[in-house]
Image 1 (cartoon, rainbow, N blue to C red):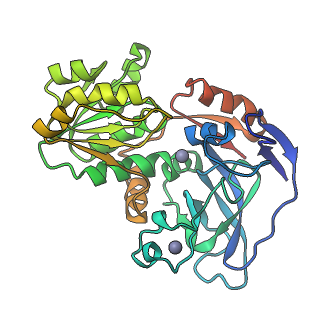
Image 2 (cartoon, rainbow, N blue to C red):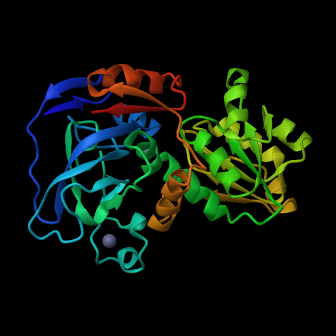
Length: 328
Ligand SMILES: [Zn+2]
Ligand SMILES: [Zn+2]
């Protein structure tokens, strides 16, 4: 089968012929239809997240099941499925027993510890797959398995109340979905975007207001929740100026810089800084369902698998509007 392979750390992606995998116990073989490229793919390629090379990345994979292992009873050939970051966990540690698999020290991640979705076929553990609602196309579904899941988890984790204002920092692969989820959730939604060239698209996503930075967010009345999808720590720190008392900054993107903030701000405004990831499958279910209802739409640039190196470059340069998705 064809796959986009990263041969070594910091090398360019290459299209190669690799052996097609066969399902082992608890696995299904998925014929891939779409696979989104996340900025985490850049971190992985550059070695910011340690892992083995050569490797096939891709943790927004969706497709159709074409074979199932004999012990699999919950999935069948023909099912339309996707999988997210967690592929398997130990099932025995405290965090597995608590149902918080994301903290398992033996967690195996899609596209990191096991082959990802940038290929014609992929193995998924049956119990790590999620059914895609009938009305949602593969291209629409793929970005929900990381970008949509992550931002919707962040919104839910911040626990916004009626009448609260939600701001989204960074309008890209994650942010364009965060704006729509906040709007679909009924919140007044403000986009914090440095790029005026995106303003028209951001309005079309449903943002009530667009501001450029933390100071202008404060001038516009501030926000009770800031969903930070930015990879820039500097922008995150700047945005805190726009947080209202009892506000929450939810961080979902990262760079290598430490986050330093004024303790006086923290105490006097009683603000909270919240780390967030993919916080549990019920959020993925709801994130997909909003798409099925037509209330959230992913905006994607699609590229055939053969053009994966070009698509990756668009992501590296921050040019994708808003998610680059490979199609097979
Ligand atoms: Zn991701
Ligand atoms: Zn565990």
